[in-house]
Image 1 (cartoon, one colour):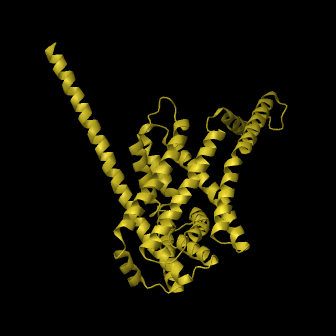
Image 2: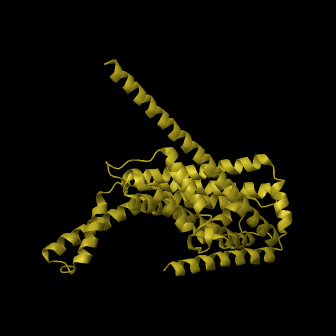
Image 3: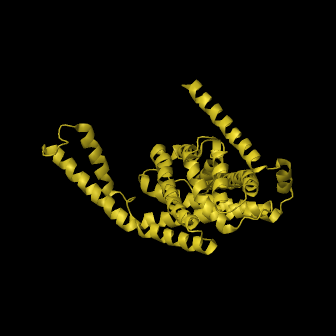
Length: 353
């Protein structure tokens, strides 16, 4: 089993490298010139990129904590905001080294190990949180396809993107009502299976599954207000991703308009969901270049940006990890000093007695 995993990892890494080489040749990218442009980038743009990456991590942290608050039991400990921020930043960094789907899940599952119910809160919470990101890019992808099909431009894409985002938020209410109807129907079937009046009678595994599904009707997770909040946060996260792409383009001074970045971004995000290469390397870049080319961006310019974007975002991501680690160290150091101070005060009080 280990040898198979190792072989898969090697094949995945080789495939990613091969796709990058193919992209460089396809776009006729001068790697040395691109690296020189990165080194000569305006430092303020690089700082903005790190700050935007920090905002991206913060939004993902807020979404996960909102879900985690409902998944944990009253007896489970809750990680602090800084701890959650650090775990999320580590997840994004791991997502640059592992298949994207695994990075955040592994980080949060390990990060909640000491707090209780790590699998449900870390893995389940992350999958639920990221499902809203997938939902919003599916809606925005339809807007991009419509604009491309009808030959629209920036204003058309902005109007379409705003409309489908509002539609996604509005669709939450009827969807939650439908889910409640499903839960109630499952509950009725589970009860009838006990009395032998259901076709599932005599099939314990199916009956247990129905009861487990029906129990969700009492879960606070099935809430229209929570779902709407998560949809809007995912939309905000998408906007930050587009702004980051715009900043990397500005860093190497390539002329790609902001709306074209936004129109292409859903396809790159969807490609990451199915990518099997480490960090989606190669797959993400090729998809981004193909999507940008659909919106009249020359292959050479799109390819150069894709390579630079990978390098700059990776650097910004690890810079945020470092900042999060320093914040976490400061929080724990302050906590340790507080405990020592309390212990000393208690000792002095005992002595005086």
